[in-house]
Length: 198
Image 1: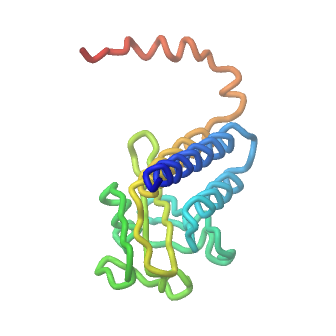
Image 2: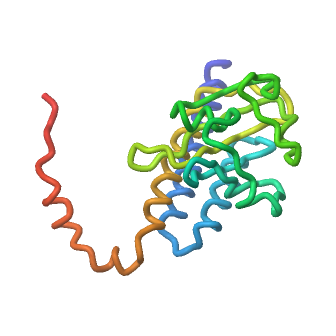
């Protein structure tokens, strides 16, 4: 019986992951402002991870700028900046790697305190780079007030969400008319043959 319950729990978690990715995919095809899309994605991540905070930073030159949050930070959205080499968030951007800390994240030597963010005191920290065309363009952070052991599934989900957000940002740069007028067949065929691995 325990095996059946374990299997049922894993199946349920997999279905939740699939629903999360489907909902993010739907944001990608709707006509919405980029702000609405990013806020929507943050809300979905909070729902999936049951975290207390989800913050999304995007690169602006050498700075990471807070662009979306599930917590009410209206005065900090677009204004809170950190250098590329600052904090846990900067480390994730520079190293292009996932970072998971289950307790006392604020004691990590890489941690940067902002003072105006309640999240400075949160215990658990999970962060993934936002990537577009194999370049880091931002970072997404998930934080828990209390210690939290991040599962492999949570880590994989946040990594995939970071990749999806990167795609959203690339799509946002395209005018709707560019999509309508593009010859997609020509685009595919002009990119050359696909080499198949033997």
